[in-house]
Image (cartoon, rainbow, N blue to C red):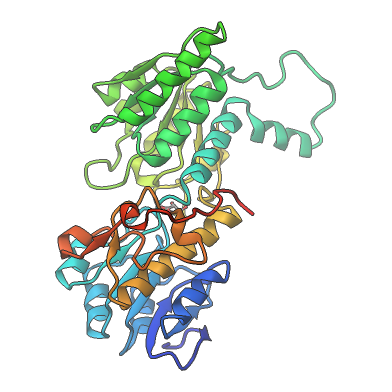
Length: 396
Ligand code: DGY
């Protein structure tokens, strides 16, 4: 693999699969080995450049599992197709780093890993919300710096979120899981913006309201806003959960930050470029009561100068999906996408019902192929597997 160090598994396998980073767990490897794949895993922790990736693809490469940090663009899919590439999977649910149209034009299915990181990422967004609201990082730094000399009534006052207003932008899988955690756990009123709406979330919260009223508690408000600006105006916490594409780049810019309440909290555990980071630094600097909890950055792994010095910013290095269970599940789904396509199996029709693929007896299908329709791939789904027993949805 060019000059790059790699770990080779199942060396006599007849199909070469490139895996651009070491992945956790074993099941993913078993899935590829069972499909007669020779698996080559790059050993560097550095982000692979375009040239590194072309080198790693080499003359013959039938499958690849790539990372969200890599630009899988037209040129790379050209090199991959020339090498016999027939199946690509991103090791992520998001695939803004992949030129799916370029892959489709070359007949290459593109997989992703939905489902296994929904609650994991939502929990991380909750953690960031409270870290920002209750000034956890500021307090911790103060303590470790040896500055805590007396309990004081005025020390690090933060924001109480109980019964306040939660703003969610993008109510897909992760956004709606986050909304439920915050609304059910902290009785927050929800105002959300999503061009498609989310009937399931609204129905769920309406059942929750019946429960609250049965208990003699006041119901929570649930409102689908007609504009993004309405959410920014009304909410005490705004969490962004949209995909990143041309229409959502810098969705939160200087003008939109100015619409937020002075003490509002902005959370981003989705993609960095959704927020204009330079404008955020300026806003946080001039609005000391405003806070932000960030898991992602506009130019990852670089961070806008000045951001990390601000006391009202909590920032962590893209850890949304970082639990053992989820990261192993992502590896299993990515490998199963590649193994299934290489065997000519159909695509699974329901990426929201994916747990069966984590079991010892997965369906004979690729769990999530984002361009299955465009490629005209045959599909199968849960309805074809009636009677299957489902694996427990718990981390071990
Ligand atoms: C994803 O899968 O898109 C996440 O950002 C990884 O944590």
